[in-house]
Image 1 (cartoon, each protein chain N blue to C red):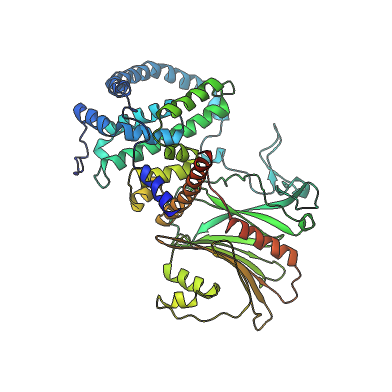
Image 2 (image 1 turned 90 degrees about the horizontal axis):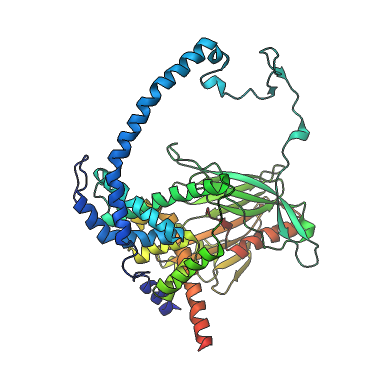
Length: 182
Length: 331
């Protein structure tokens, strides 16, 4: 998969299935942590694989397949975010998520999220949780993160430093609260 | 804290959810949608072919009725009128009539409210200047976001007596759209740059005495050597540390050097007056990371007859509170 491909080469259906089996959860999780919504994560993850299938010919192998897919997912999220902003602004009758929908999302998180650290990460601003995920969970290098986020290397370092500091403060508070409860 | 930090980062290596977030149903949807693509493509062609005669009829009708002749096509239709002119009155001649600019029509400068410090009533509104930071290396190929970032609610309490003395300056980057906010003396003119290595800064200049300035810099983790020299020069007790890197230090002549904060990474300083009597007074903050040092500095250069004690203190205290400028990320 990492090897250079023919420009016009398309993916075989079996290859796409393998790609989804291998990276489907990673892409969905990233989309969820970006959007904070299961339905948005469903859409973004599906769109990611559709685009990967269509544009496999443009994959140069200069990044890992996972990094390439994460970049596509990020692009789909930005498109989703701008179109959902347009919907919110122009369609006045678009209903806001109801209390029931919100609590369903919270219930899903309560039941499904593994470990306190992820709840902590979800409480951080999007940019902070994104850079933490890319670094700590997906193991991206600084250079890969810079390319994925469209930032300079120094800006990525700065953002990661800030995010780490916030997460460490939150984690310390969590440990302190736990200690007080016991 | 060290161990607990490693804990949370270590835990992030695990998956946030159990396997199966991208369910077989979603995978099936992807495969189905890809199967539908050729069909919808052929449907689009069919619609296009059906609409072609209709488009031809509309074009013919438009030209034969002369309606298209009344419409201006091309770039001139969208070109703005020259400055100081107004569009011709409806139904009038093609000429444009000069108009006298009306100063009253100038949009008022926006204000940003700060809470009043103890003893003051309500808020302290400050005029807001918006400055676009210009990259020093720019090939014009970068997309530009024209919109400055939004401002959060201000929480820094300011003395009400400084209402007419200060301005809030929002500096933003054309690429990416992030920005930062500083306080500065009212009426001082600002220019902002972004260096080739990602460092950035803003200089405010007193229009009545250009030698009086306020200079903000952020090295953005760049230039390790410069950072070591700066820390060694401004923080008492750090000279030997900086020299251990092989740099020779030229001591600055301070009349005040006060290291602040629990981590001792903020310093407020005043340098002795130069030959013309001008004094540099500022604050410097640094962070240490595994990739170097992040340094932010705000420094006044003030004339010997400068009388702005309250303004100077408030501007530097704002920097001190935020350990630099107030960062305004784009969300």
